[in-house]
Image 1 (cartoon, helix red, strand yellow):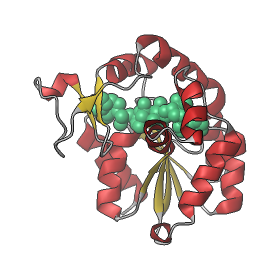
Image 2 (spheres, protein in one colour):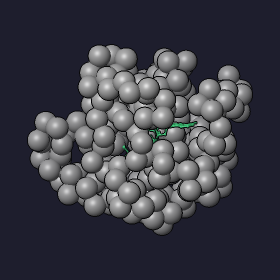
Image 3 (cartoon, protein in one colour):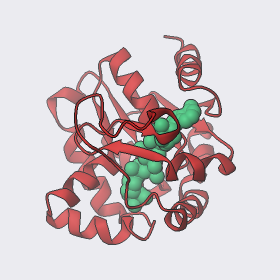
Image 4 (cartoon, helix red, strand yellow):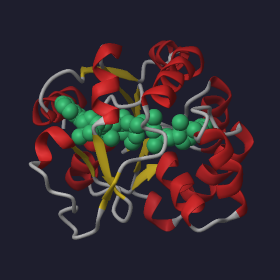
Amino acid sequence: MNIILLGAPGAGKGTQAAYLVNKFAIPHISTGDIFRSNIKQRTEIGLIAKSYIDKGQLCPDDVTVKIVELRLANEDCKKGFLLDGFPRTVPQAEALSKITDIDYVIDIEIPFERLLHRLTGRRVCAKCGASYHVDFLNGKTTCDCGEELIHRDDDTEETVSKRINVYTQQTQPLIDYYRERGKLISVNGDQAVEAVFEEIVQKLGK
Ligand code: AP5
Ligand code: MG
């Protein structure tokens, strides 16, 4: 099964991805995670990506498409994959359509007023990518995998509002793009994590 997770910053893509890859045993491909790992390793791609991510802007389409194309060529993607945060522009979606077929596009819907609190309170594991929220951490500062949790540099109030604007202008058009192609499944992201997951599984019919 080839799946795309679509949704605003903080909609819960990474959170639901963890459940979905576990259930369907497919690899989780998050372009955001790939860029952050490149930034950490100070690669050339990381240097380019950082200059965009820090400003809340999207990285260039050509760089992003190349990364995904290389990742999808891996053996583990033969049985399916879950794309999280890609595509994010119509040109990226068009490039993807030339690389592979997509079965489902899951759009996690969420009122924008929920996003600021979710993102400024988010803590992530720099090692395994797990996402938490301070509201539920009870003072805990480490991930279940043992690694220290961090606050993402782009999860400040100022950058989050820029990311939401970028989402509205460049990514939201993909909802219609995939609806017109009969791929879109919309789920309510404004409910408990487990309830969102149940709705996704039910709508996938799996
Ligand atoms: P990326 O890392 O993909 O960030 P994003 O799309 O902005 O999305 P987030 O990861 O912030 O949110 P999420 O939906 O995964 O939410 P999460 O599950 O963590 O991209 C970062 C940057 O990289 C971009 O800005 C861009 O610069 C660049 N980039 C990446 N892909 C690109 C591309 N294709 N093209 C160009 N540039 C690209 O949840 C958020 C919080 O809410 C957590 O605290 C979580 O615990 C909580 N939460 C989740 N679900 C629920 C729930 N149901 N109820 C209550 N709380 C919840
Ligand atoms: Mg994410």
